[in-house]
Image (cartoon, rainbow, N blue to C red; front, side):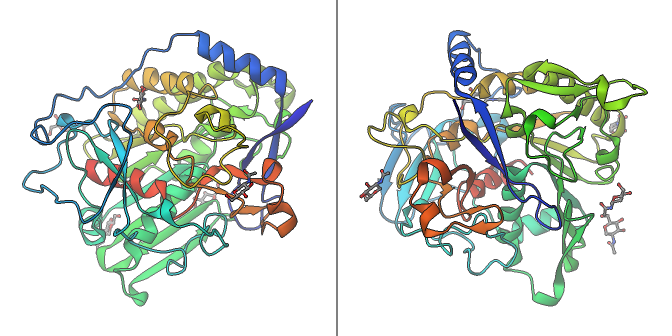
Length: 429
Ligand SMILES: *[C@@H]1O[C@H](CO)[C@@H](O)[C@H](O)[C@H]1NC(C)=O
Ligand SMILES: *[C@@H]1O[C@H](CO)[C@@H](O)[C@H](O)[C@H]1NC(C)=O
Ligand SMILES: *[C@@H]1O[C@H](CO)[C@@H](O)[C@H](O)[C@H]1NC(C)=O
Ligand SMILES: *[C@@H]1O[C@H](CO)[C@@H](O)[C@H](O)[C@H]1NC(C)=O
Ligand SMILES: *[C@@H]1O[C@H](CO)[C@@H](O)[C@H](O)[C@H]1NC(C)=O
């Protein structure tokens, strides 16, 4: 038996297939699931967050109280500059506030692809727009569009990775674009929509997105190969992509979900006269390790840490089995309208990020993790579900009526959870 595991979107544009489906053997998946559970995974973080005193006078909430409701606008204690060393962004809870409005909407921002415009696509509930991530020990600064643009003056900010990363980039662009006059901004697509450049002219700043779902090169970078068993990842080659990243001032990478299409990855390294026939199946964490080492080596030899900041967005969780958050009679993320307080760890994600943390720890150039995994895991309500697209088109009524098959529980609605990821990025800038 095989079932639909994931829906991963390639860049928009001329690419022939705009959506790929990945199938995986159910038995193999279950095998993986329990292997992951059985292994004790020690948490690794490159950042040691010192105890923070800023909110220590405020009441503390028990760990299970990962949600709360509040009326009225929260008082911000902004006497202090945000100090990443003294504050753990990952420890906190989602707080509902009916009075808050996102900084943009899916009707006003012209740069959102219809994949993520849930409200515009007919999503009936809107509470998902009004949850704020609040840390236990400190406050994240509010994302200020003008403040961001000032920090980016004369700079090139580049998001690099898969379609989840494209969501983070779109969120970033939409949050700043409304404060820029029409004739002071532009959006240009290059190379069959694999590289987007948003320019804020007055600030001489660009906010770019570069499509590289594996970071390293692969045979599915330009023309998407739907069948994961036909994909070949060149785990030791990166320069075809990386040449475009060299002169950026801030680099924000991710790479996760494309590695999860099966238990092994067809990998190619070294040079073979018969090229692709030299590919070998590697267990995916091994392939990921080599690929990330290739990436790390490029960063360490090509990036001047005095000039360029490097970030890595951790794995974006998926919500494809409602049993993971103990929902009785549920399917997946479909019909969810509130965050949950707790989710069982799923999908082997910890192990992949452990690989990333181990690679990063040995690098010469410092890399800051934007650790979105835990806080996003609670947002079962925030995926595009049946209000996104399938094969480049919005779902038909008939497709919507079959959420088991058609709900997209990988991508996030915008405005939505990636806005919080960017607040964390903003705090680090
Ligand atoms: C991210 O945060 C989670 C807790 O939410 C932690 O378990 C994990 O180790 C962190 N990952 C990295 C790469 O720091
Ligand atoms: C604009 O920024 C680029 C770097 O992104 C820099 O090379 C150039 O000199 C800047 N131009 C002006 C007019 O400041
Ligand atoms: C487009 O692709 C070519 C060939 O890979 C590369 O040399 C060029 O820099 C790319 N242009 C942009 C704007 O990404
Ligand atoms: C970065 O700056 C420091 C202090 O100015 C200097 O000692 C160091 O050599 C610089 N590193 C690089 C890679 O240029
Ligand atoms: C979704 O929610 C509606 C309204 O609460 C309910 O009638 C329906 O049965 C739910 N569907 C599924 C598949 O859970």
